[in-house]
Amino acid sequence: MGAERRRGRGRTVRAAALLGCGLMLAGCASMPDSGDVSQVKASNPGDSQVRVYPVTPRENAEPDEIVNGFLEAMTGDDPGYATARTYLTKKAAQEWKPEERTTVLSAAPVGRQERNGVREAQDRLTYPLRGEQIASVDSRHAYEPMRNTPYSGTIQLVQAPGPDGQGKEWRIDSLPPGLLLGESDFQRNFRPVNTYYFASGRRWVVADPVYIRQRQDPVTRMDPVAQTVKALLEGPTHWLDPVVDSSFPTGVALKDGVTSLTPDDQNKLKVPLNEKADNIGLDTCRAMAAQLLFTLGDLGSARVEQVELQREDGGTLCLLGESQKQNYRAAPAGGLVVNPYYIDASGRLAKLEAKAEDVGRPSPVPGPFGDGAVRIGKVGVARDERRAAVVTDDDRHLRVGSIVSDGAAELPSPLVRSEGARADDRLSAPSWDGRGGLWVADRDPANPRLLYVPDGSEEPVRVTAPWLTDGVRIEGLRVSEDGVRMALLLRKGDKTTLHIGRVERQGTGAKQTVQVVDPQAIAPRMESVTSVSWAGHSRLVVLGKLAGGVQQVRYVQTDGSTSAAVIPGLNQVKVVAASNDESYPLVASADDGIVRLQAGANWQPMVEKGTSPVYPG
Picture (cartoon, rainbow, N blue to C red):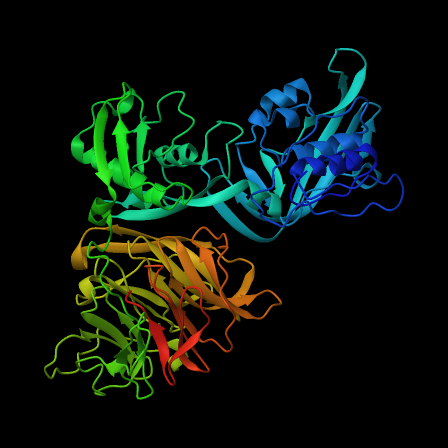
């Protein structure tokens, strides 16, 4: 019995209805024995407080009851899926690996003999399963979204010896791999968490989102904290693996038998490891602890301020506290005030105070970008807030200059020039990574390019992007602080979709080669995306339209799963911007000018006229 109720017949429905009393609902009415069968929702979608207690098949159960009972039992979390396995033949029960993968459908799967059962022989039945697949989760816990992907699977039943070895009972002997869940059952049973690794060759962390069980894992019997640690130690997801490193040596795992990890009353978590970790050095150990500290900090259900790694015999390997996490960020100077910028009505770059109670009067930045020497169309501010990259001259030129000097400064010469015939076919808004590198796209249909400017001042490097063909061009881009992921707005025909590309580098300076590869569609159900901004280590804020829907601002994880956070509606939004520090408000340009959204409040005006709001990056 899941968060979604399924239609059924006979004892299958009655057993499910009686089971509802076991969910500690307010009350349970008697079960009617006549009338139409209707759908019942046991909980709101994604309600993690609902518990499912599956039931074993009754004696001489009909095939429909076996199929639907098994589909129900898959939504539970009893140890080892023991109840679900009672619906399978002995051989199928031994071979079924629910941890292999999870297939997520838009609605819970249903099996009905009157429509689906196809009798192949006197003692064999096949039930086709149909639906719309919206996502999958692989054995490394990585989530992959899908759009309008038809799902087709089958469940095959045979007549097998009964539990007492006597007679014949219908049981399942062939079934789809892993788990098959409806969306609300998936949301009730699983939760996202960021694991953290290091950018290749660097000592700053990169978030890698995965999914773990909300409660105890039925297969490993681990609680959520232990599951999270295990997922981290197993290594990064396949997509991120080429650009990150883990400090955990090969073979290091939790000590055998560890299924629960709980912080003590000082919020210190002791993590016992196996013998493979016994002889690691102090620097490596601290890096391992940093990965754990970042990862557990995102878990939410357990407050961890210190991590102590232990040898197999219980001895301490090293200890790392919350105050030392700054040493492992892409921007170690984190904690400084970060404010948004925008282009005022005169085409000048100006700065705002995002958190000020009274926004006050914004002022243009010092230097040529704020004194009106050139009219600015698009802007990207460096993460140290000392320089800005601007697109000028009807989006034809990219210039970089200081925004902190008080003295008069000449207008910088263009670093990049587009030959596009129209402004819409020229340069995108630029974006800075945490290494001081600058990125911009040339949207010229005759020569679409992705360019990287090392240190924001050196000779531009053309980035290898093998997918930038067949009429595809980059409408917009935003690079992550860690510099290994890029949010891309890719346009083909009349549709602009959101992707995440992986940034791979070789060499240094002007001699380095850079490529952005394997772009993954992460909002496949949005048919048009017009603005994107990073809003945390693995979260984006996106402006776009769902298929057949209206424009909306929403959060999307970098793996394509949607965030539970709700963003109030706003009319006629053009651009939306966010800070990597989630305590800062969202900022947007709309018909009402520049507006902001602080936590727990509604949108409020900041500037009556202005465009292109951006946070540094």
